[in-house]
Length: 323
Image (tube, rainbow, N blue to C red):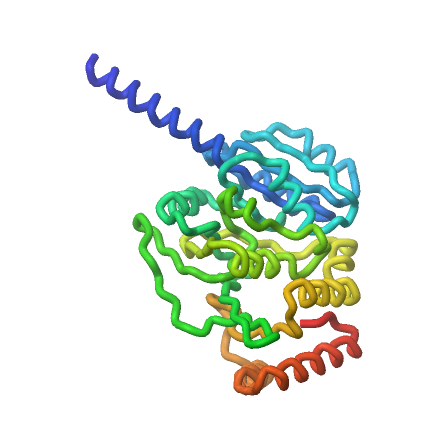
């Protein structure tokens, strides 16, 4: 009899803990025109995951498929934010932050699946008070990748690069690697998002770098990655999505807004792939690009800016967006 009472108390304690956690963690994602991606995202959230609410910032067109998807029953509350059409990723995320009140927000793109072990991100945040957010890595097209790096300034130039070897920390038995900028699959503290949030002026492109450069310049928060948490990633979308996502003029305008906002003349990308498996042996073209990039890093900042401007001009002539 005594054993049974003990078990009942233990079960009650676990139930109470789960209830507390479910009030703490929510998921946020933008929708636009990727209905099937969103449906896959929602179906990947298991009933055993301590998720209270999923906030979807929908700035796409209405459809029967969306109505069907939004009317389904889920093991969490589904909160749809009806936003102005094509108002942008930055705007959608900002509205999600403003609409929600949970202490922790798992912000993801709509084209991923939520892994079973996302609570590892919560555990790390519980043990590292200086971390504003911690993310996972991606599994896509048969490979594992993580585009994470640090942000440096060299006069009027912003450098994206990994300049020093990264140390793997042990946080409550979990691996953590710190970076200035991590990927779009991360859990954030509300205090971090309130100190600096996504800028609604970004329709597409540069909103993510803006978020992290804003924190580097204006807040105390740091960020990191737990490579044990892997999000399956299914990039792409329909023709309308791709046309908006890859529009040269929109991307050019967005980059110019970023440069003017932060007072940079250009942005130089160095090593931005912290982890990339199944890349194969580098081709002659890739080797040439790597050598050219290393040579560019050795030049004075004014020459770097001039060469990057020339590169963007040539890309524009060829009908490509600025890098």
